[in-house]
Image 1 (cartoon, rainbow, N blue to C red):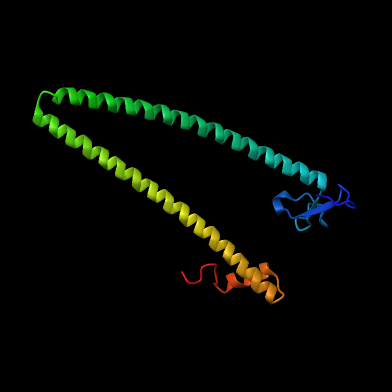
Image 2: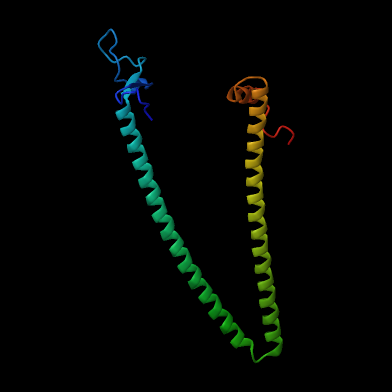
Length: 177
């Protein structure tokens, strides 16, 4: 964001690798890779816009692919449910005349339903546990940032410098875990 006094043609330094040098010339007439390339604000904006356009296209492509896979998954799930329903109907029709076989079939079906319900409850519990862990991690990060900012303010220092020094000393946001 340029301020009121800045010109859009202000040069911004950019370091480049030796293979990409297009900056100043060396004494032998070739490119000098140690001299940084400068870009204008317009050039930087153009490069950023190109990068954002590529990312937007990638996101759109991935979203389209995800939607297609989701539709395919739903269709296959419906087909599978229909096949299972038909198989159960055929099995029930096969055993309906034999009371012992019908009782065994009913028990197996009930056991399968109970197992599926248990698996669903376990999946729900696992999802809740993951959500809770994510929330706890975010809260720990906020607490750590607040602690660092508070200590830095009390010592009249910079929070980022304090974070860097704490990391170098092996002090993390969860030192007692």
